[in-house]
Length: 81
Image (cartoon, rainbow, N blue to C red):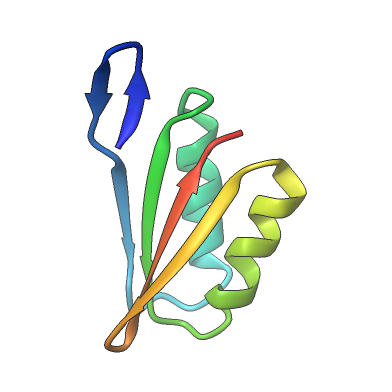
């Protein structure tokens, strides 16, 4: 959850399961542009390349990124920098 003052806002979610790269990254980039710094975005993906592409994009653009793998899906939690 993103924190704004004393309030917590739910994280936004992009369900990119079944999409091949670069679509998960492109959807993530577009959503992040509209979000405030410090906001949280969860991206669900199944394409193995997302494991490389999403963290790389985040490092290059100053966002924090963590990954949890569950079954066949990856859940990236991104905090906009």
